[in-house]
Length: 101
Image 1 (spheres, rainbow, N blue to C red):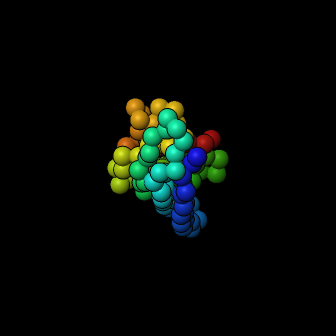
Image 2 (tube, rainbow, N blue to C red):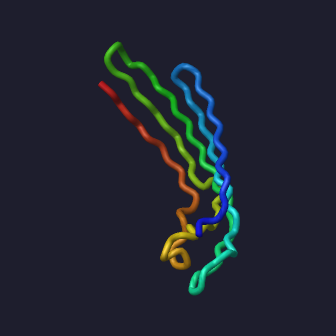
Image 3 (cartoon, rainbow, N blue to C red):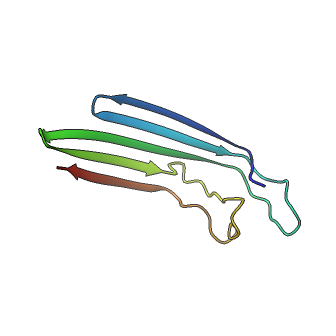
């Protein structure tokens, strides 16, 4: 059975700028079946920033910065068959460029 979870999201956008914050709050799961293992709860915070620049009338450049699992939580997906061996990804940062023409 999937544990109880709450997902919170907030975003702000203005013209060609966008900021998003997502928080996933997952409770521990102790209500388990025979042969199943308990999983701890976790909070996972993701951030995303996007800015678009118009280069001319026909093209634009979009730059995105992101950070996933900012809190670097050791998290496990309770409904996964390999949850004990394979945790969810740790902290991850990146930048993306998208050029439309």
